Length: 376
Image (spheres, rainbow, N blue to C red):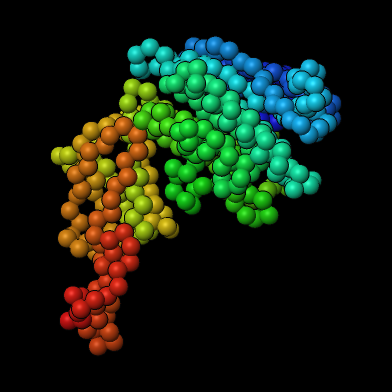
């Protein structure tokens, strides 16, 4: 777990103790205080909690960047003559080895970030975030140059939007470009924060593309954005325990798959079964093999095992299948599987006399009525 705005190492220690008391799980906290910890009233650090017995911490370090601009950050001898520290909260870089139901270990390097906020003079802040982005991209490049097949995740609160110059500079400053995990979700689920009633993405898990075959789930944990702000925070509830919604990723290095359907139409129920039409055994009991397309027509089925399946789909009353609703036979490969929409037709439109005025066919995009679909 990558943590931002950790007040002190003692806070992470308390979280680890709570996890053990509540769930019997032992976590190792890793917090290396940086310049942001020097503020006695509001100290800020980044940190990690790694699960003992499953995750071995190989190394951890703060990687301060340097700039020709003095941002009044005090960080000892971090930078040479004429240069100044760039981060109040330097990236915390850890390498871990994860064991599980796969041969050997799965090694990941994670870079935990909390970039300059938008508070104050944003014309100055955005330039600083661009410099921070360039620094983190250089860190990823350094890691992948040393180990070309390294699995790298850039995590944290980047305090900017997916299409912003800083975030794009980070993603595209690495070759091949980093993958923004939240963009694998349906568009209506792509938010982690609410500001002035507007949904936003400020929080990220950016991956090197070689991790995609093992990625089987992206899950934003809704603890804040979907709920109105209460008059007071209930310390016994997870709701509003953070003002940002965390993003959870699930990996299966031994091989996993997931299904994406972007079919343009809402309320289509999808059910994944075996090729013989029997209920499928999902990768874990947490996987759900039934999904319904949302208001924009998107649905995901996560955490599956590669193989041959049958996809049944049930249409709402305003749609009919051009060839009925015959199940689709699909072959799931490792990673994402984008399922092409079958040819659907809008339900028949009737005149006041009961005559059928026409059928409009859809094949991914709206097709204009033609002479080939005359009124009968």
